[in-house]
Image (cartoon, rainbow, N blue to C red; front, top):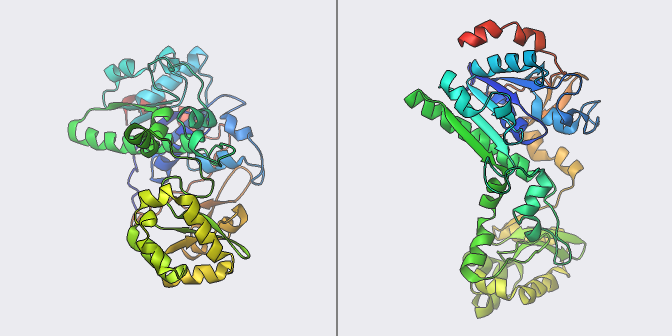
Length: 383
């Protein structure tokens, strides 16, 4: 089986989450990803914790299938070796602060003259210019700066999203942009410069609230485990717990009123006729819903929702997701190697028919230094 990116060589000077998440997708699809790490220390995500049989949860998730090379890029020999690796690569990915790779002699303009087919990718907090260019940018800080924290949480307290969405989102935009640049290179023979801003990725995701402000002069309220722009949508209390369900159209609301709430007249009430009206009168409507649900068990409510063809879900905790029957039925959990032995891993959701993701082992720090540096002559020649 030939993987889609087999034969592609990627050099990554990366830390933590955003760039490693991008390059792990490339590795899963068959690219040879050379991860350059600091001697004796490596990617600082290696030391976030040691919860997975001695491995860091984040590092194990983000770095399987890569080759780890220790280089002291502050020294002249290290910079020379890194330069040779990058010039022989198809893709160069970094998430160093703006200006750092230029000081290493690896800026796009410098490399473009000697490696015109190179796809050069920089991931930063705010982009390579502008007044925020030099600000440090970690995931929660970007979530806050982009307004995500302001629309997340409850009316009493804002909250960050519980996973690293600024890092993950920017990593995925970098990955998709690399694929587009490689298609362009196949057509034109030319490489590309790609600058991914974590802040811009997250403001892109914030467009519906931004449009609500720009178009209507109001800001969607924080709604906890309920949608702040669609009603009813979220978790509602029953006699023995909560049920989470979603209504996406006026037709679905009619079915909710008729078959679940058993109050068909609500579908014709002008206060609830459209989502805009339901949003305006959400306090009244949600009180009506929970008034009905209070006399029913969660199982009874779900049975009514299922019979009406309406979507519902459980609010699973982490152990429940780890043991989720859908993941088991589709064989999503597999095992991969690591310096500490075999560890569990989820198959990536690329799901290309006839293609099995590479799912390589998690590398030890510097595990591949000798092998990779021994090939520098061929890398310089691009062979």
